[in-house]
Image (cartoon, rainbow, N blue to C red):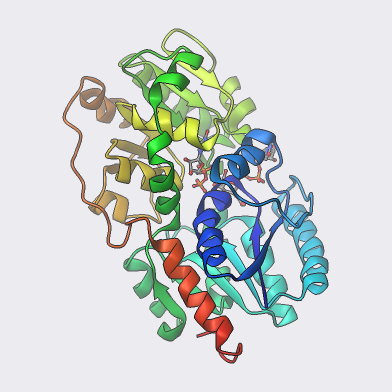
Length: 364
Ligand code: UD1
Ligand code: UDP
C-alpha cells in the first residue's frame, strides 16, 4: 500500500517532515505530491533541503490565483494524480487551500484520508483557513490533533471520537530536530542585525490585503522599531501592500526576503521578541521561550497563550505591549503543551501503519 502526502505551502513542509520520517522508519511505502501552491525557492525548495524531505513524485504547478481559481486548479490536478497513483491513504496537513482540495478530491474518489493538525478553530469564518479547517475535518477519516481543545471542537462538530488521535505537534518535532543547528550569529551577521532585535512576520489577508489595515499595522511595527531594531522576513503576499503602507528599509527596520527554515528559527531563537500573524510561529516561539505578540483578533492556537509565551495584540496596543520586552523584561516562562515533545511524527506513523496492516477495513 502507498501513502501519499499532499503538500503545497511553507507550513505544510514543516509539519510533514516528521510524519514522513516516522513512516520511513516503519518501512511504509510513501510519496509526496507537491501542489505548487508555493513555488518560490525561498517558500518551497529551501524547506525540502533544510528538513531533508524526499523529492516529490510530482509537482502540480498550480501556482497563485483567487481562491476559486487556485482551488479549481488544485482539484483538477489532484484528481488526476490520485487516480494515477491509487494510494491506500492520503495525508493532508494544516489549513491551506491544497489541504482543502486534497480532502475533497479523496472524499469523492473514496480514498481514505488523514488530517494532521485537526480540530484547531479560530471560530472566525472570515479567515479562509477556518473554512478549510472545518471542511477538512468534516471529511477526514483519521484526525490527528496537536492540542487537547481540538478534541472538544471535533466532538462538538459531530466527529466520531474513535477517528481522533491526540498525538502532539509535528511542527515541534521539526523544531526539536533543527535545534542543534539554530545559531543566531551567522544569519545576524549576514543580514547586518545587531545583538538585540525583534523579528516580525506578517501575511494574514486581514492584515495585509486591505490598505487601511496595512497602514495601521505598519505604523504599529514602526512604533516597535523605535524601541528595538526590527527584522522583517517578508512573505510575498504582503510585499507590495506593506511597502505602500511604509514598511520599507530604514534605520532600525530591515526588510528581507523570506528566510529558510533554519535561518528563520535561528533568528527567532536569538530575538528579544517576535511580532507575528503566523499560526506556526506562535507555536515555535512558545517552545523556544521567546515572547510572541500576535497581531490578530483571535487565534486557533489558544494553548500558546495559556501555556506559552504568546499574547494577542491589536495594532493600537502593539507598541505598548512590546515596550517592556524591548527594554529587556524577563521572558514569560511558559510550560510546554502536553505531548509537544518531539515524538508526534512517530506517534502518527504508528497509528497509520497499524491502520494499513488492518486491511483498510475502517480508518478509525
Ligand atoms: C497560504 C495559506 C495560509 C498560510 C500561508 C503560509 C491558503 C488559503 N492560505 O497563504 O493559510 O498561512 O500560505 O505561508 O492556503 N506568492 C509568491 N510566491 C510563492 C507563493 C505565493 O509570490 O511561492 C504570492 C502570490 O502573489 C500569491 C500570494 O503570495 O498570490 C498568496 O499566495 P497563496 O498561496 O495564495 O496564499 P498565502 O497568502 O501564501
Ligand atoms: N518560516 C520560515 N521563514 C520565514 C517565515 C516563516 O522558515 O521567513 C517558517 C516558520 O518557522 C514556520 C513556518 O514557516 O515553521 C510558518 O509558516 P507561515 O507563517 O508562512 O504559515 P502559517 O503557520 O501562518 O500557516
